Picture 1 (tube, rainbow, N blue to C red):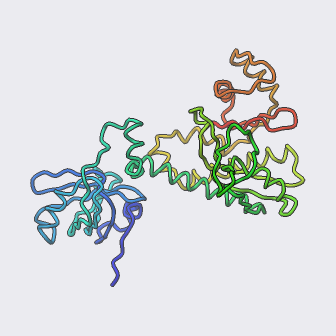
Picture 2 (cartoon, rainbow, N blue to C red):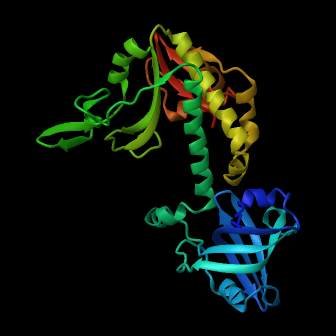
Length: 337
């Protein structure tokens, strides 16, 4: 009979309490004392405590293996699932078999979590609960974008990554040698999308984007994934409503699937609730300047871009995202997240 390996999330649900269960994962934390070893095992769904008592495992090697295995060692465990309010998640496995698949070296990431150290060990830092939660939320967001547009009759239209001309600004192009010619990494799909709407009418894309911008801010990064949409016969009011609906759709999906991840990231989900329950306002650029002046004492010359400073202040007057429009074009979309 094929062995059934259960994910941590299912074990923590409690429906297998008192049963013999099996788990595969990696050691998240470990300590031992005398004839008892305690390990916390992680997989992609969560963490659970495993207790290994010397005289209660089938083989002595199981206990010695548990004592010797360091963080991130890969293991297979079989034992009885028991309720224990002191354990992470309220349950633990009392092990009868503890098999170390591979012993890990000393884990280099400890209390020192400086930016330099984490970047040098990014392949290991990905295993942290924080990074795992971020990646899960990102996956949910990407999937929600696809579901949102496809559910509204949009066609996915993907542009080439190598493009022969610019669409944003020449100074932010990454030049690439293309055999005996030169080309550029994509800044946007815009020029291709404008051609495609005369065929497909409603299109969207989620693809990598490259900008050779030397500024080191969250708004100026050299590589990122961008979601774009284009549609024939659509005016500014319709575009802004699509943007609002898309954000609400994505947020609802994240709240549905990633509440535990938001807790791990210590995000205050109560701040997100108004965005699910209330409509997002649309205001003019002129109105935005009035709010900044009247409510926050900030004088901004008409025609200047709203910087992060002004946008953050503007958002203090709202508890949901707000669309700011300038003349006949969408100026910015400001989020409270």
